Length: 217
Image (cartoon, rainbow, N blue to C red; front, side, top):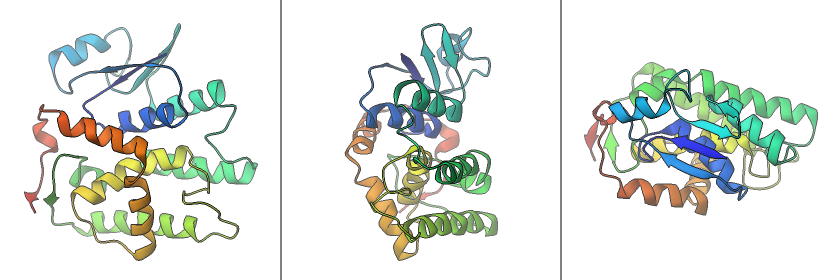
């Protein structure tokens, strides 16, 4: 398998696919491209119809959308281990993955992932609404009946991969959270696999100017 990703400092969707592969110790080749460069688009021509990352290439199969990549890896290589065992819990997990994928536009736009930075951005009402919804998800999941473990569904899952970039955003911009939500964010940030990604992001020097928002804090 080959996984095409963008800069580790900025590329949220790349991180999600990378985390799943790394957490389960799967064998693959990482191909990192510099975002918003001519070579980025040239390399992806003929591989991804959207010219976006991540892209997973497995033999003659190319998958260019993050949720589809996660589902493919889970079904083809993990025997379903990246989702809860029961059908109701799997449905709930998939609903949360889809919500991350399709929602939180105000948060994503106002607080782009920027691991190297510590910034402040004045959050408008829509951003605060998105933050509150994420807090609610974290709190509800960690307080559900029968919840065991430190992750959103007990064992680490695709859902934790989908929310990892959100946690990194909260860290970059110093977002104030409820105690339960903060505890979960700290658990995500302490993950050794995620720490490897963060360490590699800190070594990058490329700058994508549109993601350099806010003022230093």
